[in-house]
Image 1 (cartoon, rainbow, N blue to C red):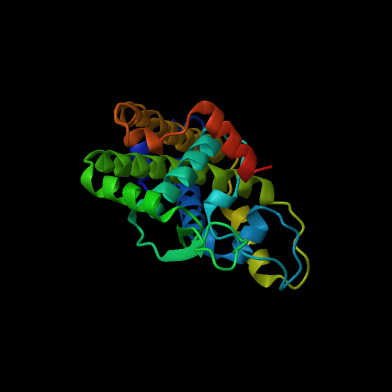
Image 2 (spheres, helix red, strand yellow; image 1 turned 30 degrees about the horizontal axis):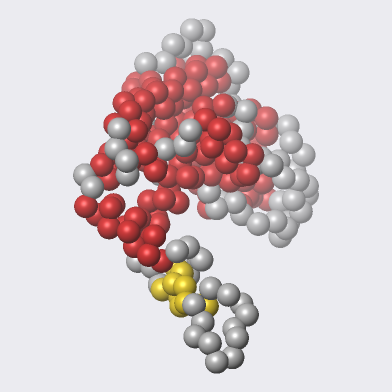
Length: 245
């Protein structure tokens, strides 16, 4: 998770808002963005899961949460795909030897296949890892991942801010002390004039990083190995539907 970016880096347009209130809200949004993936009580408040004390499972990643911001969803899907491929390319694999057919005829030598523990073709993964280590385009893949993560961090600031706006009047069941304290803090720092200032600032900064991926994608598309780390539009739509049916 990236460190909180100073508000001045966004060049915010304050309009009728009070800079001090904008700054205060910005700091709380940054705190909640950092805590969200590990704080069940915060998740309960921000995404209004209406859980009773002790119920529910914590979401482990922002990649599990979709919101109305189209570019955030697109960034999420590309990151999900990219993270999977990079992990496959960089994680040592365990070979699992198994017969290709479940039916073994007595007296005949079974045809053997070699898989990785997740069930992928071991030799294909081994070749993929060799290409990753030998092809300089791997550095561009890393740059692509880093830039997408920067965009995602900013879109997640917008996501947290939007959830804070909606959560101010959510019903918190009696006995959920942590959730109640979080909601009270949101009610204290939220400011209607500050909201559009930050909402626009986070979105524009996210778009800045998102659109800067264009040159990296061009470089990847010109390399046969690099192409494997890109999704075309139909693949992107298909994976979106798979992740969020």
